[in-house]
Length: 349
Image 1 (tube, helix red, strand yellow):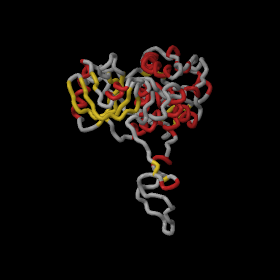
Image 2: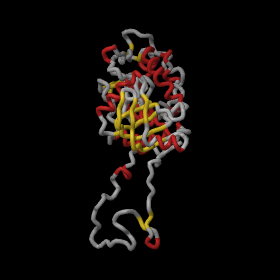
Image 3: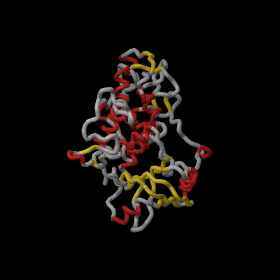
Image 4: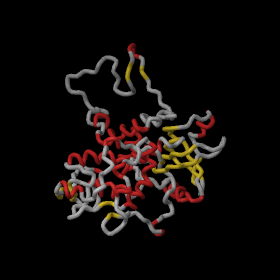
């Protein structure tokens, strides 16, 4: 899982942020304010009032909202279940008489889960989140909330089909995978999935035979991934987005690392729209594109300015010479310009 999309460069914070825990209270009188509705990072967190200045020295709500945007991809990649709890304890701290900081153990757990994602994109864990600056676990700090008991585990945790369907998570897996396909599973065995008529979005530089086999792929599951076979069996009429690694030997099966049902959800549409423009050799550039795509939707492409199919012409407007209603454009001389379609459209080596 290696394509996380952040812009951490905007967080230039001094090393001494939390050296003195009473700094904020001494320098500026805190106030209670509503968490801004446009602060996507910290919505649905169990409270609606926050302390300002916050615990990373943002003085205005505009600054809080703006700076928090760069951390949304980290939240959506689901690198740790307590990521939102940790970040919001700093960006939108609960409004109490005294500031409540995240415990050092909470910081350490989130860092352990997310630092690798950040480093893959050339972003180090920022000094402002140095875990040594946070207090040891006690009743006066925020502890991790995601500890699972054995009864919470449905047997599928950590498997390729245990995925969070967010555009960031899909794209994070995209660049790590040797192949990415949209495929219908035609046959399901306890440890094998057999697909047919795959649409290929990404493939390794394999032989002609390997690329032909990718159109009707065979996926091997490990013994602890049988729940993925059960999920595929329950949705045999649908299609799946599958990513994974190439065969370890010639003629071998593919190894899936990511399996989700294909659907027309907003997140899958967002990710699919970016498959062709993904530059897996320059992850920083890619992360910036995702940030732009997240906060500046392309309305001109999604339909606001797109003419509806079959719409009538205004009265008095005549069809231009050589123009055809359907089936594509015409070149000079009446020759039709055809668009070539291939299952290999969208492949990035």
